[in-house]
Length: 328
Image 1 (cartoon, helix red, strand yellow):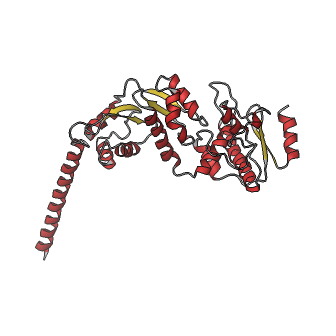
Image 2: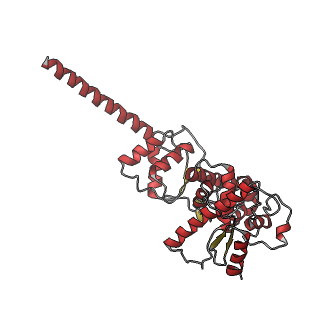
Image 3: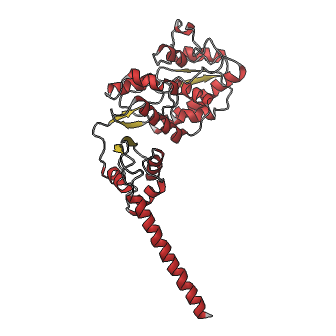
């Protein structure tokens, strides 16, 4: 009986060793083999700052540069390289092995002409196009033409972009980032978030940073402003957002003139009730969260003082008092 038990244990151990060796051989083959055989088109693959090794592996699989994300993740883990991937833009192809791709990402062999471009919260497609044109990457006209229909879904972030990338590819990168960072968001929420983003802010000197308590106050205002707009939608009042008028004129201003308030456009929320037909810019995550969960409040009015601080009112009379107090 005892011999039988030892014999069983021995065969179990032998089987375990054989399975382990087979697994190691299988993974080694997958690491050494390219995604495709023969030639494959090279493409720009960008690793943004702060992206985890797991996220990089998933992006590589989505771009069809590796067959399975976990092969890459496993390789980086055993090579102790999961924390050594460097941000930047790389020229990769499916004809490269996982080992070669990992070596390039860890060694930081980036595309030499890749440039760092920061998309600011609230920028619209034209603003982004202007920044890309200024950096010598693509023209504002080309970017606008390829991405105007994606207004609201080009996630504000810092990107590494090469002039080898087309306007469409750049827009795709920003939209993919939106999907990763914001997830599935209702279109009405994105529209409201874009208005909140343009209405709430602080006027600070270049290079100056807000203190932690100021950042917290700013987010509180976003939720309250979203609450004001939601209350107006609920009772059938026009939103009367100057920021939507600024989108029409292209000024980007959240202070419209009396003449501008009469512009005939579906985006003019002084003339038309409800939300405009589309987003007026590309909101950041904080404004999206505010639009998803507006503050429950009795406020129906708000204004922004010259420094950007928002002041709220429940009645028109209170609102007029705030105007006298903070705008004169």
